[in-house]
Length: 134
Image (cartoon, rainbow, N blue to C red; front, side, top):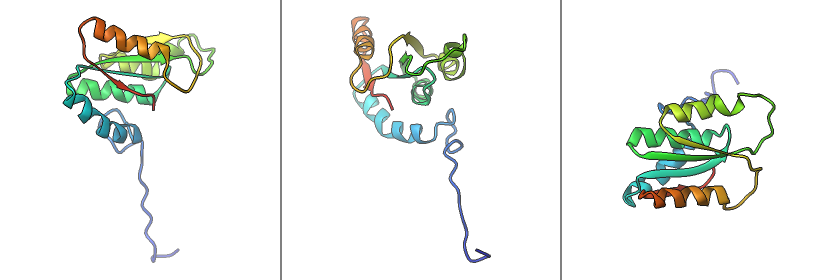
């Protein structure tokens, strides 16, 4: 193409100063202001065991001073004995999230494990804000 065309590349993995969030952070930029406006104190979401989405919800919650409850379901089979204790799970815990590992397979729709987590936050006096898997 010679010198007539300039090509720019946007690195989704590097466009955020918050836990390398990329597109996951952009989505939360729209969701979290509503959580704050609703006077929620706990972000509650669901994802697979090594979900980037749940890691980003944990990072945002830590950044803005909210609690975070993550429901992590076994959506992908794995043989690694430490799979559920490393990577995004470990990072989420380091950022202060409460992580619930649930042995249920993948399914589209409202999950019972997620509804239970929302109920439990309310039962202990919290004000949960539900964020769907993403």
